[in-house]
Amino acid sequence: MKRAVRWYPLFSVALLLFSCKTQLHHQVDKGQYYPVNASIVADSSIVNYYAPYKAKLEAEMNRVVGYADNHVTRNRNAPESLMGNFFADALLWKGKQLDPAVQASFATKDGIRADFNVGNITVGNIFEVMPFENAVSILTLSGTDMLRLADYMAKAGGQPVGGIQLVIENGQVKEFLLQGKPINPDAQYKLVTYDYLANGGDYVTFFDKPIAREDYTQLLRETLMEYVSAITKQGKHVQAQLDGRVQITK
Amino acid sequence: MEEFKSLNRRSFIRQSLTLGAMATFGAFPIQAVTASKTKRLTILHTNDVHSRIDPFPMDGSRNQGLGGVARRSTLIDKIRRTEKNVLLVDSGDMFQGTPYFNMFGGKLELELMSKLGYEAGTFGNHEFDNGMESLAEQLHYANFPFLTANYDFSGTPLAGHTKEYIIIEKGGIRIGLTGVGIDVTGLVDPNNHKGMTYLDPVPVVNRIAKMLKENKKCDLVICLSHLGYKYNDDKIDDLKLAARSRHLDIILGGHTHTFLNEPTRVSDLDGKEVWINQMGFAGIRLGRLDVVFNQATGAKNIMALHYTVDMNESQLV
Image 1 (cartoon, each protein chain N blue to C red):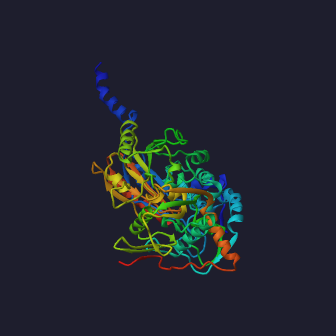
Image 2 (image 1 turned 30 degrees about the horizontal axis):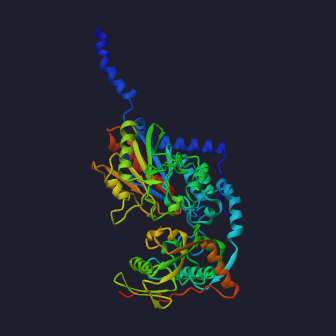
Image 3 (image 1 turned 90 degrees about the horizontal axis):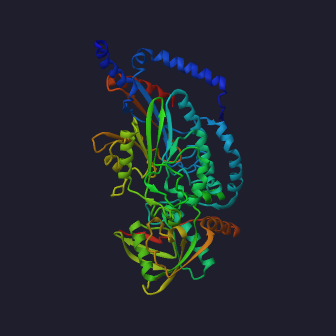
C-alpha cells in the first residue's frame, strides 16, 4: 500500500509526458525564397508529361497573324496607352461591323494583360493580351449614362476608349466629346464593350440600366485576331499611336 | 535544352544515405542533445502562378526566362531530399494568363500541381473565369484539397467540392490549414459566381484557428489567403487579417502579386507574431519558411543550431 502511494506521482508525470500530447511551441525562422531561373535544370519527367499539351498548343500559338512596328505597351499610370488605344480601336472596328450605329468603344486597363513587342504578332501574343473568354456586347445608353462613364474614366485617370475624347482636370471631367460632339443627356448612344464590363465587372456601375443590350458570341480575342489580320491583308503593319484622346491637364 | 534526369531508385537511396550520414556526423554534438526535443517543418509555397507552365519566353520582357513548373519540380525534389518534413501549398490564381488555360481549361495546371505534390490550395478570383460548373469539373484533376472557408457554395455546382480546413500531421507536428478568398463582386463576371456567398474572413478565420489550436490540438495554424497583401482603404487584406486574428501563426498570401523579400511580421490581438509571406506571381519564386518546434526549455541553444543549418541551405540555392 505504502509502495503504491509513492509510485503514484511518478506515474502521473510519466502520463503527462508521454500519453497526453502537449502542443509544441514554435518559432518561425527568417523566411527565404528561391528564384526559379535557368540555373535550375528542368525535371524531365514533368517536361515529358506536358510535352503533348505543349505540342498541340504551340502548333496553334506560333501562327503569325501580323507585324508590330513599335513596342505596343500598356501603361496603367497614363491617361492613354499604345495598347489601350489599339485595343479600343479594334473593338470599335468590330462594333461598327456588327452594328453600324456604334459610335464609341470602351474597355478597361485591367482587362488588357500583355504588350506586343516589335516584330511578328502571333496567335499566342493575342491570347496573352486578351486571355479572357469575354465576348462583345453592344449597349444603347442614355446621354446621362454616357456622362457617368466619363466620371468613371476621370476617377480612374483614363480608360481605353475609341470614338471618345476626354480632358480630365483635377480628377474631374473638363471636356467629354463623342465623335467630336458634346453629350446630350436626353439623346441615345450606341457603345461597344464586352460582357464582363456590361455585367458590372471592374467596378463598372454605369451599365446598370442600358436602354438596350445586344450580346454577341464574337470573342474579344477573335476580334483582336481579325483586326490584326485585316491590317496584314492590306499589306500594313500594326502602328499603335498616342493621339491625346484622353488627357489629364492638371 | 539541358534537362534533369530523375534519379533511379538505387542512386536515390545511396544519395539519401550519404546525405543522412553527413547530417548525422556534421551536427552530432548538438543534435545528440536536442534531437528528441526539436522538430522542424519546412513550408514551401507559391501564389498567382497564372498558368505559367513554361518559363517566360526569351523575348526581352522583364521576366524573360524566369519561372517554369519543371524547374520548380526539381527545386522541390531537392528540398524534399534534405528536409524531413516538407509542406507544399498554393494561395490561388493557379489559372489564367497563358493559352494553356484557354486551351485545356485548367486540367494541366491541376495535374502538374498534383504531380509536384501540392498538399492544399485555395481559390483565387481567376479560378472562376470559366464559371463554377467548369471549375467543379476541373477539380477532379487535383489530388489535393482546396480550402475556401469564407466562401459558402451551398446550392452551387461547387457545393461539397472544397473544405473549410484540413489537418496534416508530419513527423509528429500537427498542422492546421485553412484558406480564405477575396470578395469576387466586381472582379468576377456575376454569372460565374451566382449563388455563392462571401463571408467576412476575420470571424471565419478566428473561429477555425481557435478550434484548430484548442480542440484539434494543432501545433501550427496556417491560413492560405487570396485576399491581397495590403490595401490603403478599409478593404480586408493579409496585414489587417493578421492584426485582427487570434491563434493564427502564418498567412501565405496572394492576389496582389507582391514580391516580399522577407516575410512581414504583424502582432495579433494577443500581441503574438503572425508571419505573412507572398511570392509575387507566375512561379518566379518559390517561398520557404522553416519552423522549429521545441519544448519550452532550452530554446536559445536550439535556435543557434537552426540558424547554422539555414545558412548552409542558402548557399545551396
